[in-house]
Amino acid sequence: MRQLLKPLRLSARLSAGLLILRLVAGLAFIFHGYGKIQSPFGWMGPDSDIPGVFQALAAISEFGGGLAWMLGLLTPLASLGLVCTMTGAIWMHAVVMGDPFVSQGPGGAYELASVYLCVAVLLLLAGPGRYSVDCCIFGEKG
Image (cartoon, rainbow, N blue to C red; front, side, top):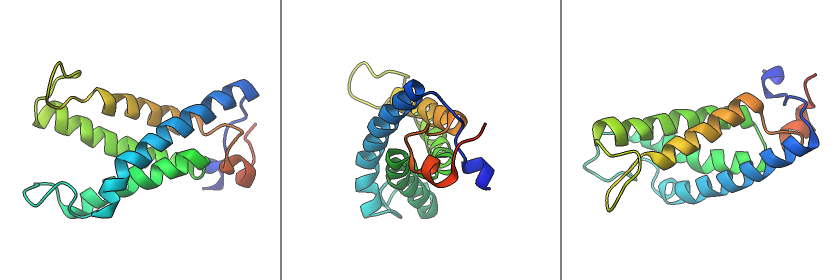
């Protein structure tokens, strides 16, 4: 498990880019997850077909994952949770609700969830970079 959490050895330039990405995307997820974490088992409303446990997992992954990304703490685990959550969000918008990729007016879209999914996959594969708590705790690979 320790090897999984050990970040790749990356250049200072690439690590700085990952830090900026983690801070911005992490803050966005904290804002997205804040309202959900206030009512984790019912944030989708009483008429939702989604079980409360899955709503809670999404709330925790967004709020907690955003905080973890900002710190660069347990980044692969946070990224995996966010990959699952964004995959579910894309499925709900694209398949279940039939929303377009980009909305041309009122209504939903799955563009933003797709961008967040790509960021989560990048951080899952590349890791947080050298400017992270993961690097301080676990060191670097290579």
